[in-house]
Length: 258
Image 1 (cartoon, rainbow, N blue to C red):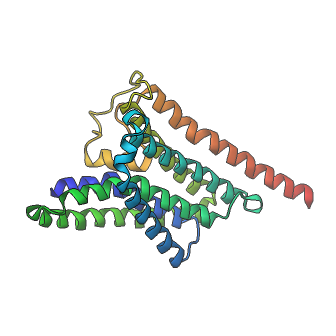
Image 2: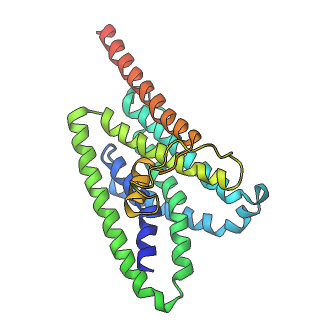
């Protein structure tokens, strides 16, 4: 139970902590707004759990997988919008603060649902409460420590390199979550399986602690398919070149205006 709880934190809770560290290092959010986003995300995650039976009967039994996939797709596109607002603040679609809050709510729903379902199933087992409590303390400590380290790391990157490096880190994280969500479509046969590009199980196993950590941070998969590699690279490279071009155009426009 102890190990299962820690692994659950690394798999489902850690992405929430990581996103908090990455976002708070780039966008200023008041404490009240942050608490509102956290509570809203938790409440919506509870609503999502209550609708599991209804969702499971939709789309020929693939409703839950499709819903979780759509949440991760929405998370990625909100990251793209946030990047646009950080690069071109004068003509942003929406204020960065609101986009950051939307990201927090989305990832709590997407990742917090499995987390809450796990504890709901084991909460009534008296013999498991002590191990689960110790696992919560250990897992929460690991997640919080990593989030704090990421916050200071991204803050240092921002002070040295400006907007570009922190935004690239956030884009890599969001692309990793998008790749992880593709497995949901493969499970319900909505996405065909393709040949494996490489196998790095001998180096870092997917099910190991390091495998879970790298999967959350960069979307690491020991045996990625061609579709995963192609989408992962496109999800990072295309927006990155767009932001670079957008920033260069903004500087050129200001130069002509002056």
